[in-house]
Each structure stands twice: as C-alpha cells, then as structure tokens.
Image (tube, rainbow, N blue to C red; front, side, top):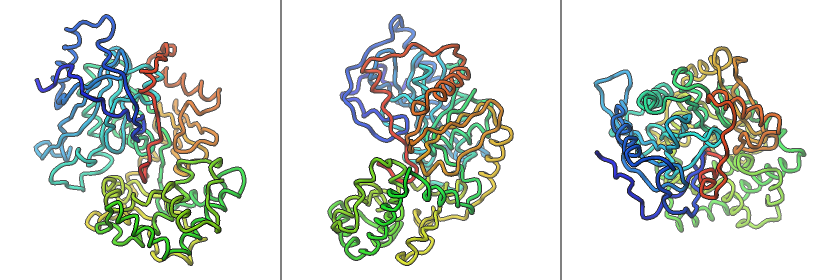
Length: 477
C-alpha cells in the first residue's frame, strides 16, 4: 500500500481557500480520529480509496480541525479518452473526508490543485466531504509529452467523470459540484456532458462567452459600474496617464524586471509590450478584486512616475506578464483561445496611445507555438443546453464583477441565478441579501438530500478551513 498511514507532516501546508488563492495560516496539531471511529474503520477508508479504479493515495496529511481526514491522491487518466489504449498521465486531486454517509462536494478548480485543506462554501453549508481536482495540463497534472489538442472541455469533463465513477461506491450520498470563476465554468461543462454524475451544481462568478465576437457587454459594464462616474473616470485617466509616460514607465519596468529576475522571451518579447498589456488590464483587475470604496487610492495626473507604477503593480501585477508569471497559466489561455472565448473591451479612449493593435486577446498571452484558432461551437452548445435543458443549476454573481457581464442564463428547471449587490469576483451565497441567501441555501440543502442545515462547527480550528478568496481567471494575486 503506497500511503503513509496517518503520518503527520512536520509542518502543515498552507490552507488554500475554496477558490484556490493561497492563504497562509497557523494551524493546530493533528486532531486524531473522529469521535467513535475505530482504528479499523480508519484503515478501511484507506483500503477502499486504494481499491478505487485508477486511484493512488499519495499521502495522508495532518488535519487542521477535528473530525476530518485529509489526503492527496492521483487518478490515472487517459490523455485522450476516445483512445483507451493510448498514453496516460496522473491527475492530482485532494480529499477532505468528513464521513462517508455525508454529501460529497466535487470542487472543480479549473486551474491547479490547492496545496492545503479547505472547505468551499457548499462543503461548509452541507457539512460534507470534498474533492478538489487539478485541471488537466496544469503542472504537474500534464501529460509528457503534452498533446495540447487534448486539452478541451469534453476531455476535462471526462476526467471528472472518471473520478466520480471511481469514488461513488465509497461516497454513496448526494453529490454536488462547485467551482469559482473558471472552476465554475468547469463544473458547468462537466454537468453538460455527464448530467447524472452529480445532483446539482453551484457555480460561482462563472463567465459565459457564448458569442466570442460580441463583447459589447463588457464595454457596457465599464460604462456603468459603480454608483457614480467618478471612479470609472479616475481609472481611465490613470491608464491614459501611464501610457502617456510610456518611456518612464517602461524604464521602471526594466528595473523591476532586473531586480526580480523576470524575462519576456517566450510570450510578449519585450517589457514595452508587457507594459501595455498590464495597463490595459488595470481597469478590469481593479473591479475584479477591489470596490468603489478603494477609488480614493487611484493616482491622479499629479502623481509621480513611481506612484503610478506602484499602484498599477498593486492592482494588475507587473510580474504576471513576465514569462515567470504567465507561462504557468498557458492551459487557461489555450482553452480561452480555442474554445472558451475571452473578453475584449474596445478601449476606445486609449486608441491614440496604444502601440500594439488587438493585443487584448487570449493568443497574445501564449507562446507562439500554442496560439490557435477559436472554435465557437462547443461553448455555444453549452450555452444552449444550459438555457433549455439543464436542471439543478445555481449561479452566483457579483454586480460589480466584470466577469459577470456575460453570465449563464439557466432554464427554469429547478435552476436559479443570484447576484450579490456590490460584490466583486468574491461573490458567494453569504453575500446575498437575507431572502436570497435563505433561498439559495435551502436549494443546496435540498439537492444534497438534507432536510435541514447541519449544526455548524464554530471552533477556530474548523474556521481555518473556511477562509476564502476569489479565484482569478487572468492573473494571480
């Protein structure tokens, strides 16, 4: 048996929030087995996991809260699920075990796997078990050699299907899938191709670019977000000011890159081009992660070059568009370029200051050898299915989040959309108004087969599992 049975790590890995951005906390020591659970029962879980088809239990790690067990696992996946005799790769996922009769939450990350234990919001609300799966082609869950043609929404959905099929004999209660941002999109695609795998979907801040050529919704969003024009104007003026000082800004960027050992050889080719992309991204990134209350910090034309540079860096992140930042996200940009689509505001107010036409597209953020033609059919198909045939789908958006400008519109078959007022890309059920929060929670509990909300665990140790930050699509915090 490959697992290190109940081996405690010398230092627990950082807890990563439900949306997967790292959040370091100090955790208490291992809490031991659940009250009433025998050593034999504990061993039986390991044996059953090891016996699941294709599953390898890599390790059992220290648990930050009583009543839980935490495992790192892999699933042997086909590179091409249409070719059963073809090459395979190991896909990472993690399991936070509560109790086998409890509901299971399938957390589809859309990105890399979190490196620590956490509970997504649905897991907390149903007091359930949770799996969190690394998206194929995010390192190290990447075939070698990598045939990028096999990175598409159906192949990824089939990865999730295999994991569900392998573990349902162990966790036979209701299954709910969830994810935030691209993870929310991924949960929708899994439901599209394998609707019987789970009993409901809770998708947070999931974009739906059903017609990639029609992006007016994003221009409309940036023309109206916030309660007054003041913040919108300040951000646009900041972008103009930064581009007007291009020489000074790029000199600062060169110094920043040298000090941080950043390079621009594989994607953008120069700091000048990466600078322009970062400035274009500033308005989007501000509304994605900040709020109107933060507008007072936006520099004006009286600010120094360094003050403008530092603010843009704090909002959009100059390091992200260096090779060291952006190449990690190649699987996302590849999927955006080939199937998912990408948002492309017009930036008409910057037209005379830009040096690189049509820069704000997915292919711009990929090495040349991965740039591909867009196929609109798969996402149009998903959009039609969600509108007409899908059932048990719950979507949560934030009214101030640019990613929600093109949302999913579910059918009326036990499916719902909620929008948290003033919320950004961190929107969730907890941020809804009282009536909608109660309704959304009741729907989730019903889908999970629960007649009432479980008794909440309020200990500090358990709460370390519930720290949450929004999962980003286009840049890391």
